[in-house]
Length: 386
Image 1 (tube, rainbow, N blue to C red):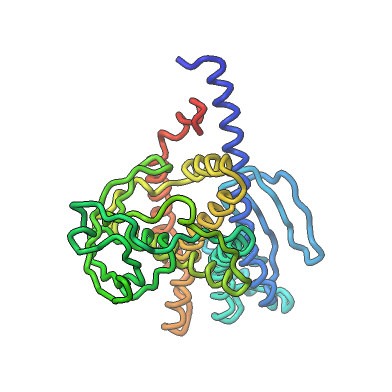
Image 2: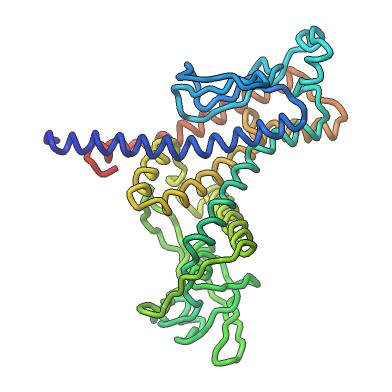
């Protein structure tokens, strides 16, 4: 039975988690919708509403272009509504289009050229990726990069590395052709390639060697309340004073590193999803709002830098999910536009309606699965562990 003290700690922890979650999600959603908004304005589309959250409005205002900027009570997303949007497909009826004045037709999203409509839709996810690049670039240039040389300090006996012939002092130059500038690069590549053979190019006293290693997959616990399969080969890095160097990146290098870090998250996420499909990974890492809220609170306790890193991670995830070719998501709209480009005309209203119904069913099933994975998280908050 929970004591009064534990209950108070749980309530305090819950509100800390809630505030952290709102901060993370508001930043990510705002940038996503801002991408849609800015490109729509650039294309001459009249924007009726810019909303953060769903449901009843908390407060809002009109800008000089007549757009209603609003904050709503349900903070699980947002939307940009165009002047001629009428339904879930973000499309007006033929009758509504026929009633439009010339001025209204000039500002209609659905009467814009195909490339402009596609640009507006793609701008949201791309803005999420750009946010991640900017966050990483600022962190690399202001906070700096902690680098550990990709030098092997110890080889654990009986491991894949020992069987492949690794020796202490080997410097890992590249893995499968990808250069490794730090030990972190080595860990990231190995971790993401459990049970897949990798070709390591190493420098051993000035001599280049190629060693073939298959990382051993192991189930590893993480902070998200589940397990994930990670590759390990059995090498240890140099530790202690002098083992790492903190170096601040220059502007161009920081941007390049930000792009590389964002690209790594994208490719790792896609690889994880592919592994889930073929049964190599456990699907319990697929979480929803409760999982995001829980981890938001955890990383916020660690400080501003980890919180910004988490925002970048969630931003990439939101951008990537929205590009999935599922009707209702941005990727679904882009799929319809691709069909329109091939056919030379839009899909029929009936076809689009069926597509959006299927998309809604898929999204609801994904949400149900995510909430099922997150079902134990509220208990952590009540115990004061969240």
